[in-house]
Image (cartoon, rainbow, N blue to C red; front, side, top):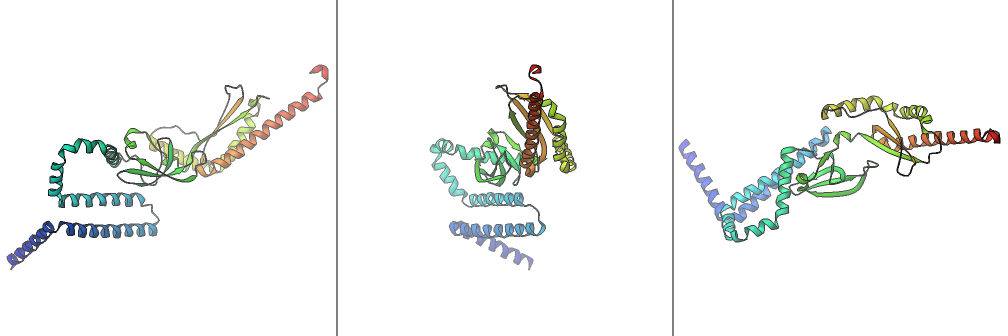
Length: 298
């Protein structure tokens, strides 16, 4: 009885194999439709589960989608292996020209292989590549799609950037994900050297520290997290104020803050306002003192 069942299964598989070999076009269509249906159902289940749990599964969804496409391509190549082999033999004389023509695509594919091995970033990370900064929203074997971020205001510009994966190997890629919530924000104030700026530093520093006091505790924890990940200490949560002159003999006040990204612009405006108020009060005070002096004492 078991022998008969085994024989029947063998005959069934043999009939399926014969059908596939004799009707490769129909078999390919069935394979593609079935595979895409299963992949779409799996992705829909993942997205539904992601919405329920609130987890960001864009990276997993992207990997499954790209691996599914690769598996389908491999299955189709196995099905049409004999025809592909015959075609490869027939175009052997043109192989060099084909390689040269598809060089960029090959480099993009090799960049994608490098990404899968090195994992310098994930979908959802902020990165800087080729002098552009943005959030990775999609990646396939040919390109990486970024949603551009303005490096000054840290807001989305609404522009999508498509970067060939070949640049993953040839260009420096900076992962900015750990600076996505907090950033090292720096800005400059340029003024005429009308009075001594160092006399204003103590009060100005107190005002600057007061603006940063409400997020100091969280910034300290986030700083520790970043430094543990980078295995280096390079962040100072206290504002840094530097006074120098530029090539035009003007005063340049540089303020550097470790602050939340969404507050960077507002903090810059408040701190700039404080410095301008102190600066003008100092100038007016000195002018009043000079005006009260007798002419012979001036």
